[in-house]
Length: 152
Image (cartoon, rainbow, N blue to C red; front, side, top):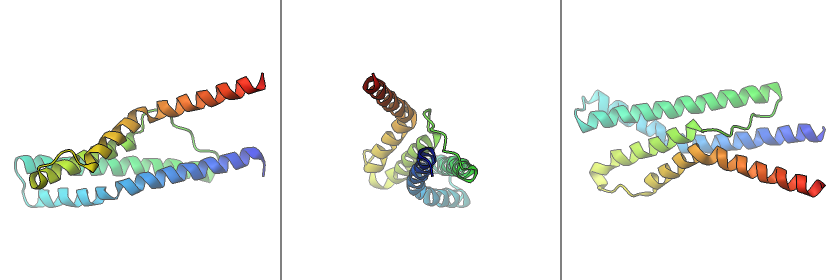
């Protein structure tokens, strides 16, 4: 096995680990989906209807984005190539952040508390979804600059 093949295998394992981490964050989406369906079946009106629609929409968006990421990763693994390093906007992270905001909104009538760990995690997830690729690109550029400076 050559160094390039090892590198491709490491990239596949790293991409699979990142995907498993996102799936772990998406598990509460199943609960939100059930709550949204229950609200629709009960004939919710007003705020509760809007909340039920938001729960269904965010859980569906998270599910679709994660399913798309899994199929893309499996296609890369089956073909034996290294996963494409995506340095743009990560929609799965953005949808996970929105799902966390929906969870906070659904608990607000009971707790009357917005600033909570899920709310703060939602802010972080949306920030990473928008700027995580740029931060990774900056890190790659610094490594390349150091490697170029070392070879001179």
